[in-house]
Structure formats: structure tokens, C-alpha cells
Image 1 (cartoon, chains in turn orange, red):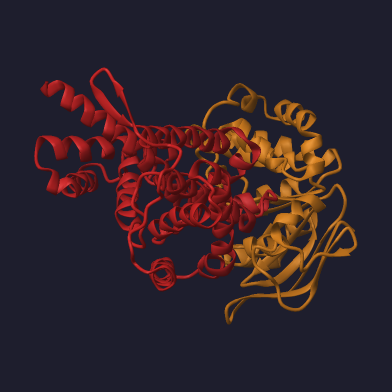
Image 2: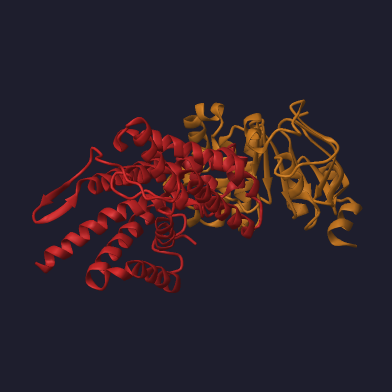
Length: 235
Length: 288
């Protein structure tokens, strides 16, 4: 098991937003975290990155307990997190953004080979390497954010709402890229609101509602599940 | 004759402006990095002048030799400021942050008055003395050297921030702290580095000015105010903006003093500030 989350609770001050959630991700697996607005999907990714801390339960990564490890040390362990709304560094160039993605010593060593690898996956980034990030389109920024995440040589790539605001064509490209990434043995855990889209690409899915896990299972089982339909359509 | 006087005033203004620019760059760096305004910036400048003074008075070290020590002391002071004060107010409300650094300024000034009295001091017979005469203009040697050293320091700062890996990480932290943290860049450490460099800049300026300026506990107040004007004029968070703004302020101060009335020197500078706030609130090179 690559990532193993057991029975965590998360509180913002006194307000509990995650209740007793358990999630796991295996090596080379693509897992979708589904749920309507405000169901706590992003919070779970942020908890895995320790941007928010959890009460109770445990988070194991590669069989080591990582609950107490600070955010900035997690890339080194092999966890890359692409935040919601891309969050590229707007006033730095594409190249500088990518260099910053390879911050820990091991990633730095591999910098040039990672760069050429990332440029192969996202050819557009190479031609724009000296362009400032904020001058690029939303789709390109999303590509950059994911590329930056890959520069840290992750075993687990977490992507928060990767398709938000992207054109169908770009979404198609991204799906292909995700599948390539997974085929290289990197696991992907992503958050998505579009159930049909998410389940069409993921191996498994977890469905959250109001901070509680409602149902989980293989994508093809979930896609026709009545309970899933109820969560998203309210019927 | 008139043109010579104007030229003289411009050179004087330019030299002062380069010093203002470096002081402002320190302020701008800290602000850009963590959105905290160092209201104790003037007091830090005062401390660096006193550092120069005491190293001369107690150990006989001339300011030009003691400047590396002053820079290191100020950088260390910056790190301490971060770990003992700023760290605790990073997530606090803005009013609390203002009170914290403003309180720090009062604290430092009062301690300085208590320990060293409010007397005016100066360094007697420093190595840099006298003035040069260049085609009819008189240029004070310590002033000239001070401004050149500040310019060099400014260029080094700029190269550090834009060309080095740590500088890149500083920029990243300034632009999006959480995104940087998530890539493995510890913002706490970056903030400490920012404070060290910010106050290091002040150390250079203060250490060089100790050669020719009176040293007293309130000396930093006007410099800090000018630094605020420079940061606003240059654009919040823009380091290169500080250079232009510092020079503009130096020129306005000295030319305004010459052409209109020297007793209103400060007024011209603050008039510029008001004009900027009204007509171009993002400053010359600002992003916000």
C-alpha cells in the first residue's frame, strides 16, 4: 500500500469537516475523490500534505507514519500536490517554476533529465520556457502546475480539480497525460466533481458527502450505483 | 553658474538617493516576502550606525573596516527578529502585525536612549574624509563612497534575488507561500533569510553613513519615512522599483531644496508620495 489513511477526523478550529475517513492508494493506481461542493475533498488532499492537520486516525505513506511530518518535507518522501486553481508562481518563468519543483536534493540531481522528460510530456512548455507563468492560458497553467509536481519525482501525485475551467480539448489531453503518468508507476489521487469523467479514467473512486465517506469501490461499480446518483443528483 | 549649482544639487541628490534605495530595498524585500511592514526599519538603521560607532569607539575600528561586522550583526538581528517576534504574528490580524513592529521600533529606540542617551555623536577623523573637486563640483568623499557601496550592495541584492536558487525560492515564497511550501521550500526559513538580507541592507547603509552622519537615537525616523515613500513609489514588492524611487526621492529632496526652499525639503518628498497614491497607487513598477 502506497498511501494508507485510517479513520481521520479534521477540524477547522471547533468545526469538524472530515469525519472518520479512510482512504488508500496502491502503487500505480489512479484514484478519484468525488463529492459535491464542500464535501471535504480538497481538505483531504490538504491533510495528506499537512497544510491542515488531522485529529485521530493515522496517515501512512510507504508504510511509514507521516502524520507529524511538516508540509515542506513531504515532496522528498514522494508526495507531490498540485493545488486547486493551479497556483503556479505568476511572476516567474515557466522554466523557473519547473526548477522550483525539483527542490529536494534527489530531485535536484535529476533536474536535467526530469526537465527533458517533462518537456516530452508537455511540448508546449518547452517552447514557452522563458514566458512568465501568468501570461499563459488556464490550460497551459494547469499543464505547468502538473509538470512542476512531476519535477519532484513523486510516487504519489495529488491533483485538486485538474479540469476546472478547461476546454474539452485540453481535458482530453490531460486525461491522456494522466494515463501515461500512471503507466510509469506513479499513483494519482485526484479530486473531481464531474463523476462520469472521473470514473471513466480512474481505477477506483471514493465518494464523500458532508465530510463523510459514503461509498467507495471500483469505477465500473460506482458509475451505475444508486447511492452515487443520489449524492450527486439528490434524487 | 546656476547650471553648476543645479548639477551639484543633482549629484548630491543622486548620492543620497542610492542610499535611500538600499534602505527601501530591505523594507520592500521583507514586505514582499511576508506582507509585513517593518515599522522598526529606521531603528534598525540607527542600530547599524551605532554598531559602527561603538566598534570605532571601543575597538578603534574604522567604519570601512567594521562594515562586514555591522552587516553580520544586522543580519543576525534580522534572524532574531523573525524567530522571536515575527513568527508569532504571521497569521495574526494586520493591526496586530502593525502594532508588533511599531512596538519593536519604540522598544529599540527607548532601549537605545536608555543605554546610550539621546546625545548626538559622530566618528572623529574616519579614514574617509574630505572632499573631491570635480569640474567645479564639490563631492564629499565619504558620501561618494557610501553611495557607491550602496549601489554595489543593491546590484548584489538584485542578482541574488533574480539569479540564485535561494533568491528564486524567496520570490516563490513571496508569490505563493503555500505553493512554495508544498514544493518543499520551508517558508519559515525563507522568512528568516529575508529578514537577514533586509536588515543586512540596512547594515550596509547605516555602516557607511556612520562615516559622515550624526549618530543619535532618532536618526532613523526620517530615513524610514523616506523608505516607505520609496517602496510606495517604486511599487510594493518590486526591488528594482526601489532603485528608481530612491534616486527620484534623492533628486526631489535636493533639487526642491535648492530651487524652492530648503526648509520644506521633506514636504516635496511627501508631496510625491501623495501624488503616487492618488494617480498611480500601484507605484512605478508595482504588481498590485
